[in-house]
Length: 275
Ligand SMILES: NC(=O)c1ccc[n+]([C@@H]2O[C@H](COP(=O)([O-])OP(=O)(O)OC[C@H]3O[C@@H](n4cnc5c(N)ncnc54)[C@H](O)[C@@H]3O)[C@@H](O)[C@H]2O)c1
Image (cartoon, rainbow, N blue to C red; front, top):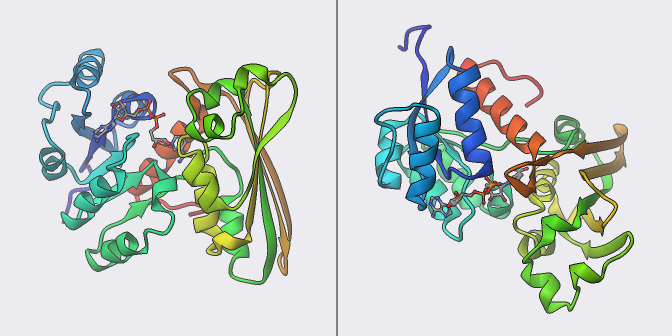
């Protein structure tokens, strides 16, 4: 039995835009409920810088296994082909994980089953969208097609291989342009860094085939905007979220960081609202 003053030991894997901001908020704002037990990144310089900036001692970890053993819960904020392996190692060790890379978890039923068996949690933040709570509730009854329209500035798509393959040159786009329209598996495959919210909706509604996605860009856009529409036996939902981009990474919305933090806070305090 843990004391009421116990601080949850949180490890951060991936010290980029999201991981660094979450670590900073944990140290500065959440110190009553949790503490940083480890920082890990394949780029050791990022760990060094973050530990120095936050004046943290004995938190630099040299491997995934050492951060897992030092922590109660791990924040996964990596940008890697090995993300699923990392999440699986955390779950195998019977530790909970707050997974930011929700797109990777679409179709990962094996991992959700393992978490259930090992009595630990895969926590998925709502990310940069509003309405996930209502979508989950609506999924309990009959719903019709869900549409997600994502509008992003051009800078969020620099270096995207799919656009290269399609011959879409960002520098030639002068007005509002639809660059993708289709199903969630395709969207996540072609835009892994941009469309985690689509996977979040697909997991929340429990029927990925119902989700129709449009991605629109324009030189005029300055915000990452996500608009969701669905109707069904419950009534109708229409939400629109206009996000400022994370200053450290234009592909990421600041709201994604905040929603990760709120999810972590709920886990640490045991007060679950709208989850
Ligand atoms: N859920 C959401 O709504 C949402 C929103 C934005 C971003 N994301 C996702 O969150 C993740 C992190 O985003 P970010 O903006 O912080 O990215 P980022 O590129 O700023 O940082 C990623 C970090 O991961 C590190 N990394 C890469 N491979 C690693 C490995 N094998 N082990 C340890 N560290 C590794 C990199 O060195 C980098 O520091 C991405 O997968 C992104 O798609 C989710």
